[in-house]
Length: 202
Ligand code: ADP
Ligand code: MG
Image (tube, rainbow, N blue to C red):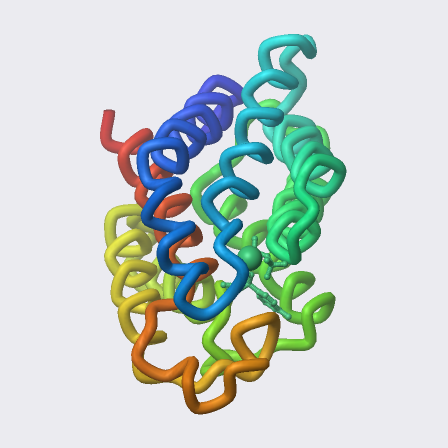
């Protein structure tokens, strides 16, 4: 079972990973965007960890809703509302349960990612964060709920964005010139799943 402490550790571990990789995320975004994905994500996840320190710990769903709200209000780029929606919708799906199963988290994340697809109007293959998120969720569903398998699938999904033509977001303005670069948002999504796998294995 996954409790509130697990969700805290996931988000703080994710924040640390994003800080560590911020320069790389910004480099990727400078190739096919506006060079702010690292700083956007860092600002958002710093706000998440600060909010978690201040607020009394609620159930897992409340932790995700709190984090999502921070991302939506603190990040100016497209990724803030998208990741914020993911976490908020996943948190809502978890409801008030004090502990949740891996399956419940997987289902909640699916609800959140579906909401991201709806909000951004993107589909798999459009060279966005969805190209890491959907494979991760599929691996989580088929491999009997292994976060390690989900993390590996997210990494592969992020790598698979390199030859894709961007159809959504700023990268789509580049048309054919978006080909040959890894999508920054798919890369940060892989970091979020790597953090989940790290926390689950510790
Ligand atoms: P911005 O593009 O506003 O500068 P960021 O640089 O923080 O925002 O985030 C860019 C990332 O957001 C992209 O790499 C992509 O993965 C994701 N993204 C952009 N638009 C969409 C969309 N419509 N649907 C899903 N993901 C998107
Ligand atoms: Mg950007």
